[in-house]
Length: 301
Image (cartoon, rainbow, N blue to C red; front, side):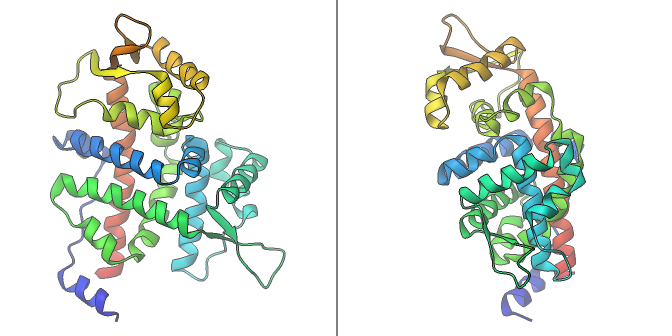
């Protein structure tokens, strides 16, 4: 047994898994979520082109399926390799993209160096491998969520993950499969979908919600200061026209707005958008907390 595994087993605590209702009931969840949003924005800036491409929820789901297949193969040699064909035949993804679209998404992700083709004895298979850049990004993403869960209960998920890289490989696939299948995540409320089913993707909605102090009481209009579409467009490398179009859709739903001038100061976010975002994110934290708990039990029990 490796020394690191011996050390972890001697003092391992199986971390708690949470339900959506338990997360939303926690007085610390809003603060934890605000911090998580800020960390996700920081991950975007590590590799903006690749992260921006996968921030549309439909492409995110395809990328997560690919990661799940790849990690399952790493922990179980009897599993099939990750291939484009296998992804295009994965029925749960057909709700969000056609076979041709899935293949196109993966081709684009290869251009962004998220996946690479590896050698195979069978030239017909053309298996894919995760690039070092992509593994670093998904590990940072995973650890960011572990840190947020630790905030809720003083747990040691982050320390465990950083000490034992296998926890990502065992934890990610069950969580990804759960989210791909869960309409609470893959079909979010309209207030959230307005952002996440566009090229602006989740980056902008993380940015907006992170502006609202987590300790503040929600009101019909939650004021967060100044926001100019051009600043958002520049920060996330998208066109101002596209940014304005998405913001105007959210504005028409009554979920954002400006008092006074058209754009600028006195920007507000609706309580509905913040609550919908928190509920949507809680689904992801539920999946990750439970998969991490199960992975620890599997490895260290």
